[in-house]
Length: 150
Length: 88
Image (cartoon, rainbow over all chains, first blue to last red; front, side, top):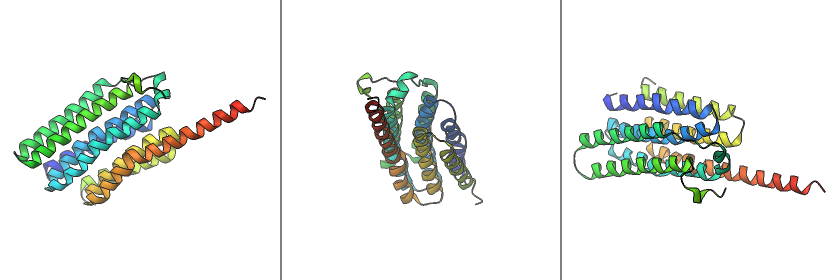
């Protein structure tokens, strides 16, 4: 147990725990947003775990999650378009908070690893994660009218 | 079990799995299942099994919800067609 794994544990307990609560209760729009936030918060946690265990190979997990998490949210945005069109989910505050948290974690880890291939991989993961989540939350809010054929 | 990360991951999995059973609507169940897949991936990572976590992420975060939602949509479409055909 070191500082990195403690931070990861706190991220999982606070962030992912809150999204489990959010996905379990409330209207459909809140559940969809919570599902999107769960991948946005678990990915920095996995990055912190990789640093805490001292195994750079574990960064692959965060990379795969950064790729597939937004894809999963886009699946919901596409197939639930009819239900979501009635009351569109808008969560700019939570989305930007999660994106900012991911950016801070990636920058801190970059400072800890130092320049090299590992740092490039971290930056790619962070860019994929924040970009993918912003696109996914915009799609949930109905930002792409062309994709709304139900 | 003395590692707090393992305890937190186990609690997350227990909470998400209980919710997945308790929720009745299949669409909402798909959302909970996506989060459950994520929690399971975290648990596998904490237990030092990143290969299992990788496959869990690939299946749990995108494929399971896609399959569930596609089948829900197909069933609903068939129901609509049947109710349309009935009034005569």
